[in-house]
Length: 383
Image (cartoon, rainbow, N blue to C red; front, top):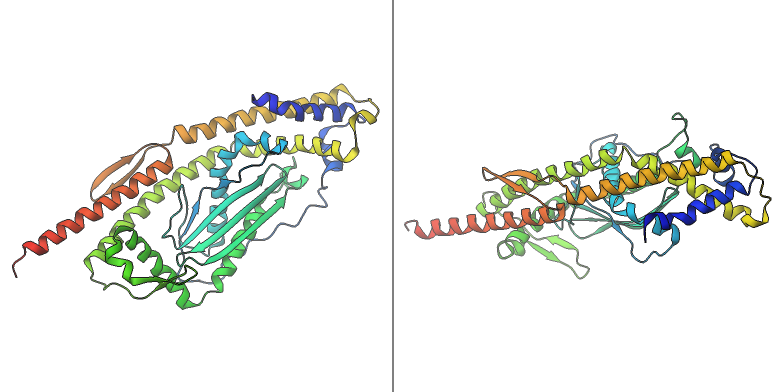
């Protein structure tokens, strides 16, 4: 169904709301239908690092997924924007975690990293300009869940105020809550547990490359939690090769994370404005629901107020079209990722998910080739 056809009911409701009420501009409706600026909800404050918390864990945030099966009419209106949000919101969380100062490298990746020291996987349950609900799961390299819960927040009128001195950042408090809960889980770890997480991460990466060589160093209990039963020797050539290959992957994921950052910066030019106009339209819709049937109210509206609703819708539509174009360009016009591997410049193209798979396949091939060369050298060396 064309986008205009899907948005028409919401536009019509907004027009009827104005034509059925006393003449009023949008700000009046917002002040009565939604929380006032004075009643704004308290935003959770981010906990900043006051002292060193070593080792600093590296965090991988996978691009967000969307919950399937939501047939709500308002949710369907937002469908064209969902794919953009799935790449935009992870960067908001990444920036929040980095700002807190508790962590090492925090990166957004297109696929789950089973060997990540800390892996964040998130499903978007609800996302409108008014409400955001996320199902967040945080797991460390041992397979232990730090968090597995739902976070939800509702935006206030102040978040979309015209006055910049009053305006807030919609849903930043929700991301602060996630970051704070991750910090609390981190400080609850003993130094032994923290060291095990770092070792388990590298060993899992080694097992993925060479299971026969490294699987004996880890064990899993009945709950699937990994225990480190030993470590390779410091001068183990195969283990040193694993570390070198992982360093190459870190450089690659740095470049990939930058692409998510560029996309976020592009969306920042449009997304906040789309949110504001979307919020205004939803405010009209909620105003109708709270005041009763449109037909039961005197029809004494003003043409100026009607024009105000249409202007809001027009701006909403323009921003939505631009958002959709940006989302499409993120899929079809992703810059090739260029990285260096063993002195060779490697260029990967296509969607980021495909580039990530190609890179991992290259690293696997490189490891096998180097292993075969080492074995031939050993066999050909004199006794």
